[in-house]
Image (cartoon, rainbow, N blue to C red; front, side, top):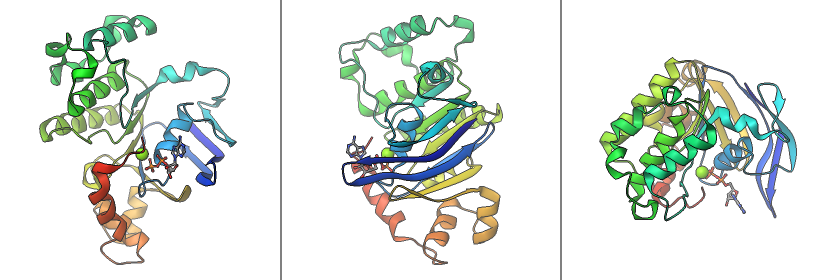
Length: 255
Ligand code: ADP
Ligand code: MG
């Protein structure tokens, strides 16, 4: 469904992505994991055509993504930090996107709109929303057009516990519909239930891409956090970077 071949991207001297090769297919929930600055968001933005790679090719359903941007319509994207026109009201945002996409009401997925009670804030301008409420809007939009592919960059960051559970349950539902879901999170326990595959990035390099059962078998660990720690630290139970990212998760300025 998504194939990445020899993808590389530099920002000046910094090698943000270094010869990435991967294939993701329908029904998979791929967790992109790695320290801050390892290239997760850059990879996601490359798939979305928001970052132009220096070299390499990305295919979505067998078609190269450069050229025809229509593939974007098949992807629901929840950015790490959603940026919206300041003065646009919440309701306007949903109506505008619906009109652009020309999707009939019956085809819309309003599940999260309802569960997050966003209708009650339809009159509020985007600039007045708190970070968490903005996250809810971003989440509801990612699922709104019932896309076959979901790309979620730190979806639960900034959400209150109840909203976070609602979102995780929604992701589980979409997983059951056999969609392809790419997800990043610093909160590895959030990924435990969801993940079918783990892609581990470090300094722009893909260290591994494995299915969760293989990872569990190889490490003897059930929990994703412990399994990753096991791989990265050659068997030690804790990896430094896990503490590091948990401490830094609020300050990740790279979206
Ligand atoms: P992650 O999402 O894994 O935290 P990113 O993909 O955001 O990492 O960033 C990877 C590296 O590329 C980081 O060192 C980051 O500072 C750098 N980077 C990302 N976007 C840009 C940009 N637009 N200009 C310069 N450097 C960037
Ligand atoms: Mg990121």
